[in-house]
Picture 1 (cartoon, rainbow, N blue to C red):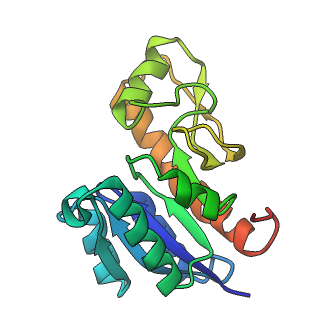
Picture 2: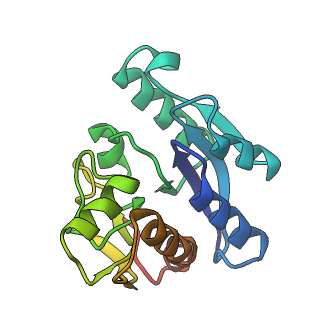
Picture 3: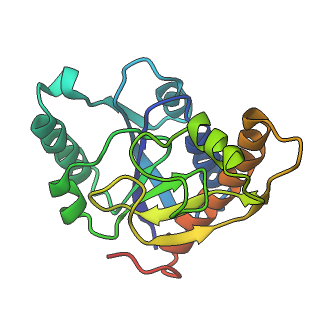
Length: 200
């Protein structure tokens, strides 16, 4: 059974690429990416989607005029493409409450730390890895969670641990965690598509 997926990005889209590669290799459990949406027009994530032949859309306050307009446009796109699962892959905007409620337990996000630690507003990208190192943590690693109305807050459904090394820099830690993100996110989508993790 297939699962129709929308992926939301704000940047280069390396996690998106891992999803597209897994789909191409038949490792996504029948899940298919139907649309990639970005909140900026010029991000490389959209180019990755175009190269894979996937529909792309730029949806932001700039294009829609208001946050309410963004939510309406997204819901229209999800309906048009009959989307069953929404994946936030480096998407830095808070999802509208109405969208979260309509897609309860059908929106997932990947975060580059072991939630509930080092999550929340403003905790993204290199800021997370700097905070992990500053706290003297012995391990880090990505988390995949269902999305609710707060940043990085919904139930965690998958985590993988990555050791923090004595001589780590934020950049070195980020690279190791990202490599694991690229495994964990497609595996979690597959588990959802195959019903091993129940959707809402």
